[in-house]
Image 1 (cartoon, one colour):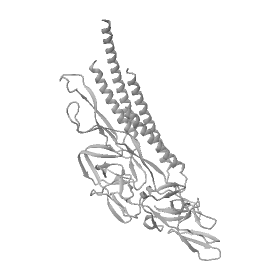
Image 2 (tube, chains in turn yellow, blue; image 1 turned 45 degrees about the vertical axis):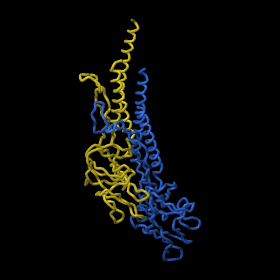
Image 3 (cartoon, helix red, strand yellow; image 1 turned 60 degrees about the horizontal axis):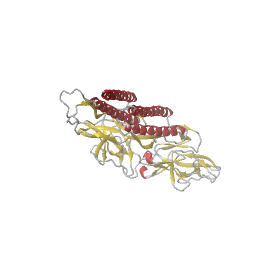
Image 4 (cartoon, one colour; image 1 turned 90 degrees about the vertical axis):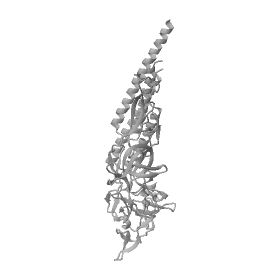
Length: 236
Length: 261
């Protein structure tokens, strides 16, 4: 069997991973605060290959998160807030602090302010809890949470530097790097739409399919060559 | 590839639900006191194909992971309690709220319900009731032979009775505030019920604590903006189509794979 058969296989596997990423981006085309992912490919040599080998395989090795801001839409809901300058809200989860751009704030049964379903943290890193029997809170452009005439705290905004990972539910974690508090202003009454672009998604989809097909074509050609080799053997 | 089939299916399901929510909003575009809903989505857990520090085939490690998300799910549908437009009806029994409060009524099962629809009428016993006949809480009974009813901004209800010069105070409309109105449960019939998530009901006089003044002779229309819903509808349909294209593409690729043999 030719090595080429296996190289074609790695290409097909890599392209199906790419399609999986495109499918996820398009499924989340309407998810607030969603950041698209892009598969990155790399060629590699099998570990036992000779140094001068010219047959390189391909693999999807990483997914990059596209951190460009998505389009904003006006909701006129005073509890929809969005930090500017690409900064993030901090929330507390069971596995530590996570970051989100989904600023559709809610209040849970204990009066805690939630973002993306988890308690959102203030500038000092603690949760914001409404007093019992309070009227609905409002948030101003400086991130201050008001209930009536009282200020309960200031929503923390963070500037993230470094490698992010997706945690699902609109949450992102820092793999390496730092989170610095930011003074970015908040916009109220708006949400950030998904930044997964339909055009980009459609093109990635076509490219994944065509590359997959050419890998399949290569596999078929190799198969025919092997068939021929067997036929030659039979003739003798 | 099999993964992308299911991922795209979650996408189509989510768009379908969004379409359902949009059509309900549009159907209620002229329902008094209706508050539009929206579907809120969140991305599903991510499949980690390779973690950030896992060794590569060539022996190196890499700072970024290979993660592919598994699609989308609907986290919740949330109601937007933004103010609807005020419509002048000149009907003395129509009351609109200019703020965040809710009018309180007694439901047929005796429990309290909350509504933004102030299109009241008077029942056979001269009591103030909603269009569905629920009593206003606290109950307000108009005297017999009432000629004119007036509702002040602070909720005081006055009645002018035939044969008397001075209007008499017959009751007081109250408003209720919730810390988290989107946690209210919609009961249909323009009514909402309190839940643990909405917070406890805070009963105030109209105008206090941002509950809003009452406007007699006005009704609050639905806060549905037809243009916004149409745009949502278009983007939802396109997203649905793209997700179905993903399924087609994955299917074609699988077919190609099957034909290899």
